[in-house]
Length: 159
Image (cartoon, rainbow, N blue to C red; front, side, top):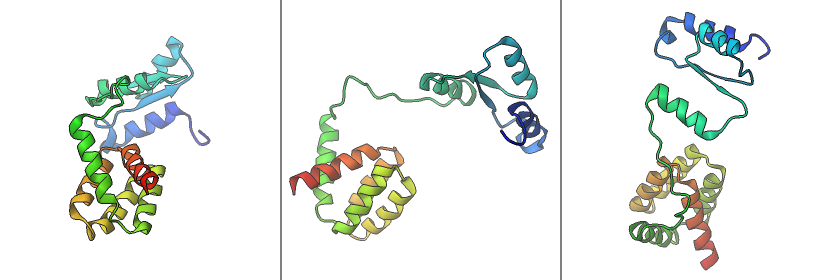
């Protein structure tokens, strides 16, 4: 960091009354030596993760310090459940009634993973089909951008 290093940044955050106990500070470092670990913890870091990073390490440290539980998709099972397939088919069918400009904006927002733009577009879709808007909002809130994109692409292939 150009102005201060990570140790100093952690110390400065800990000086602020608002963040003293509630904020968790996790250092990301290439320094795996014991003295580096001791230095980070004494500076106010709650934990650290060494580079190179593995997703599982990041998720594990978040779980340990924040209690967040992650739900992992079964990598061997990419098929939708029967209910999920019916819902996807229903949403895809409902998408056919949308004006092409809304569909294009929805597709680009899903491609970009832009949940804010997705929600803005869904507000416009609500005027055409409230049920479709609710389903798309649910998918957006679940970060299922790929599901939205797949349904749009399937629709475009069929037409």
